[in-house]
Image (cartoon, rainbow, N blue to C red; front, side, top):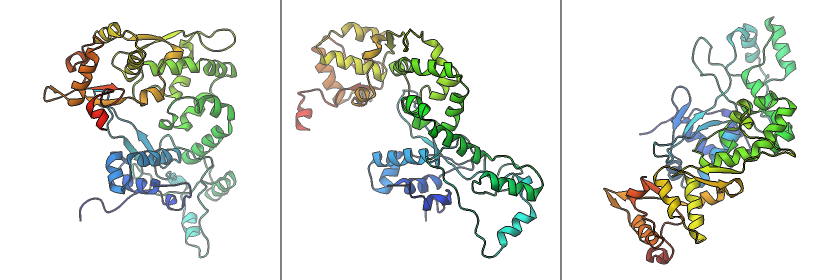
Length: 372
């Protein structure tokens, strides 16, 4: 028999009604490949083949597992800015401090007919920012369900010491407070791009640390900050907690009546937003030769904030390879011929990248495009 035989995951996952679709299957696969600290690297494409589904189904399952606090995801990027398989950490129960484990606790667990208290899964779901490493140091491998204040006080009375709030209890409390803060959720968390890749238990304390005036300033400058980030962002770019912790809204001059005075931003050369703008101008019949030549020199392209390509526009582009063994790919050769009519030397050498983003795999009117 080859491959892993065991999978380490939270037992509560098997009775959690919120795990829909392939989420439980994906959690099981990740739990069977983790290292001693819970980390593993798995390709969503390979997991899709294992489960007989499309990669988008796996991606939806991963997002759900992150949102519910079962895993942590860390996106990886190659040196050429291409995507690599993500790293995942399977999150486990919190470790109970050794000083709060007594003989009385052991006896209580052995009493007949007494079931342990149920695990309290907060709603809305929460994500833990950081979990202790199970089995490390002198702390025994022992997990407990989240308990309320009365249970902690009763446990402390038996042990004879004050019982502190555990890491899991603190994370659940912060997450529940964050989701109850409508202004934070609707005006910041749901506005900022890709918050699924960060943890609310770090972001919300950063929001709480601001004064009411600072919160207003942060929200007023947020549209300009997002536009600036999209203009030349990389995968896994600036997070909302960075924006709040570093008070990055101060980089934008606020104007009377709210908002930020940011008239234009520069799309970094050879980035996905740059290519989205390039093809937009080509489709509109605008001259792009100077823009292309500036890109070759590494110079970006300045646009109005309102004209920054949206996620939908950049997401519609297709990435193709430019050459194989020193020869242009068939797709690249077709686009080279098509762009020559615009006076653009659209060749692998002039692009200076191993891949390029184009509106479609084949140029409009190409025989391969017509056949497809």
